[in-house]
Length: 114
Image 1: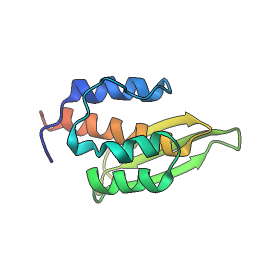
Image 2: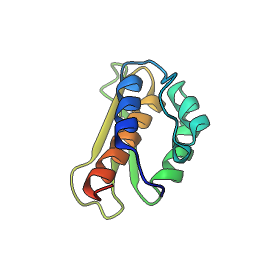
Image 3: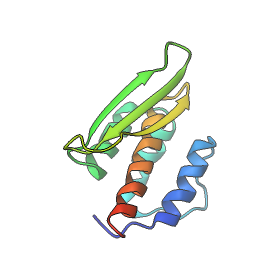
Image 4: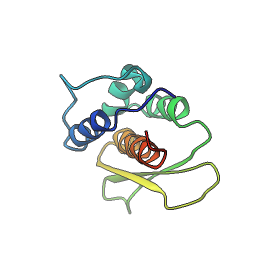
């Protein structure tokens, strides 16, 4: 994968968590902007396609927290080592998955010294 700009990823993550599309933030090509936009707006197909594109071989799960409308996504590396990386979103499971994907990319960049 291309060198990851963790500052740009962190800025994007903060905006997505706030429920605000990134507007004028940098849009690195490796993020597949169209898939991010669709996942942000609720497309589970786009979230899965993005996951497969940027985190191939990583396991994922998605669930509703006890039926109260808070969705959580968890991502774990392919060998099930370490703690899962989570994302949550009210009423939008695809956005929860997008948040988890962004967190996983940031964690991967940090641990690999990118």
